[in-house]
Structure formats: structure tokens, C-alpha cells
Amino acid sequence: MRMTTFDKREEGFEAKFAHDEELRFMAIARCNKLLGAWVADLLDLKDAEAKAYALTLIEPEFLGRNDERLILKIVDDLDAKGIKRTPQEVAAKAQELLARAVAEIEAGR
Image (tube, rainbow, N blue to C red; front, side, top):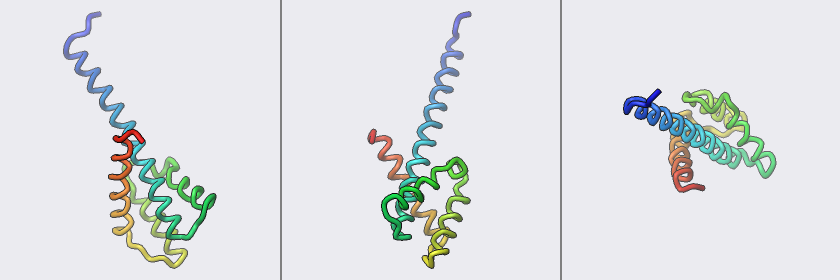
């Protein structure tokens, strides 16, 4: 069966979509890891404890499109140690770190 121009375009769009989704996933995972390092620093966690905390934020439940659960987890974790941050403050930090993660991925780091 011959591929038409339409078939080739459709295949191209599907490949781009798959690539974009992979990049999105990588950016969210990297952002969450950076966010985990930020929170670990606020919690005064060191070395293995800091790394372990950051890894909890890249578990599958926190890698979706809705980051509300992630934000609330961080707010709760900080609050448990007497560190007050609003969900808006944490969300703003997450947006800042997402931009950094995307830039790092685009730079090939």
C-alpha cells in the first residue's frame, strides 16, 4: 500500500506528539527532583536523606499533569517541620524550576 501525503503528515504528527510527551515527562521529572532538592534544603536534610526526599517527588503519582497533590504534599511536609509556605509560594517555585528544567533539557544537560 502506498503512503499518501496525508499518511506521511499523520505519521509526522504522531512522531512529534510522542517526542513532545517524552520531553514533557522528562521536564516534569527533572523539575520535581529540583523541587525536592529545594525542599530538602529547607528541611535541612543532608546527603542520602535529601536525595531520598527528592526521589519521593518523582514517583509516578507526582508526574502527571495535575501537580496539586505534589504542592500539597510539599506544603504538608514543610508544615510538619514548622516551616510555613503557602501552596502559591510552592507552586511559584515549581514554575520557576520547571522553566529551569526545560532549559537544561533543551541545552542537552
